[in-house]
Amino acid sequence: MKILRLDELIRQGRLAGQRVFIRADLNVPQDDAGHITEDTRIRASVPCIRMALDAGAAVMVTSHLGRPTEGEFKPEDSLAPVAARLGELLGREVPLVSNWVDGVTVAPGQVVMLENCRLNKGEKKNNEALARKMAALCDIFVNDAFGTAHRAEGTTYGIAQYAPVACAGPLLSAEIDAITKALAHPKRPLVAIVAGSKVSTKLTILKSLASKVDGLIVGGGIANTFMLAAGMKIGKSLVEADLVGEAKAVIEAMKARGAAVPIPVDVVTAKAFAADAPATVKAATDVADDDLILDIGPKTAAILAAQLMASGTIVWNGPVGVFEFEAFSHGTEAIARAIAASDAFSIAGGGDTLAAIAKYGIEKDVGYISTGGGAFLEVLEGKTLPAFEILQQRADG
Image (cartoon, rainbow, N blue to C red; front, side):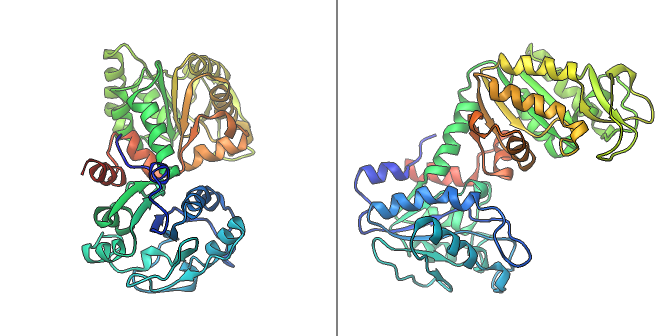
């Protein structure tokens, strides 16, 4: 993917004295008192900001936070706690600027935070007048927010259209490189793990991947629908019976290419959906009418682990069982450990996937961990993300 990158501009010495507008993803969780409970996204934004400051730029940073109503400021929508935390990480004060659309005063070597961009009327619908005003604030626009790359909004698309120069920051660049490596030019065999509660939410992804991957591992409630499609009993497990035909179509599409969707040979069942429900391992053919399938069994886990160990590229989205309950976490742990031990290039994304990676402490063993949930899923669906599209247009133009 041909895009202009921030590090290229820095190498060319083009940032000194320039006004740089960075769209970061600083949408962090907070408790009821407004305290930040997890600051990964803020820490991840620091390299981009430092790069611009060290290159002598006058830096403006903004992000959305929560779901504010455009034009209506409420204290809980403020980026003030984020600016304070960013200041701690940078070792300098980061002033927060409100009502910034009509002008911002910032000198080279300084950084300011622009209040929640979704408070501006027209941000979400990418209003042209707003986008042109924001573009006029800067000499260089930097998109470093992959988490919002699937949305064509004022600060993710419109400003990139009209700014004198538009480029990708290091986080967005890394996402593009990882996605390209995993999906556009993968080392074979390419194996995807798509898991979750419902086929309906991942159907377009399953169909898209069925034309690309050598192995498609399904897990969670999705696997139940595929088991039903394969003519197996699933008891009272979570299932979407109306999508059995779609599941069969995915299985057939894979088979036509000499690829496969492995169906579990054993499962872990319970009579109730509860953390303390007794877990029973049984053959996939022995599921009783009152059973709930809550995880893959050890034999299935071993088969899938071997497949992952032999892969060239792995794409992972979703745990294969109810891994929050210890008795039903072993399948997901086996998958996680196999990915960690595999020589394959792996890319993982999605909130539950990141929680599993953290639970098993394999962060350093995954090739790339994607920070954007919705954006990551849309990439797997085969969509071109608006933020990528406009940066490519500007690079070509």
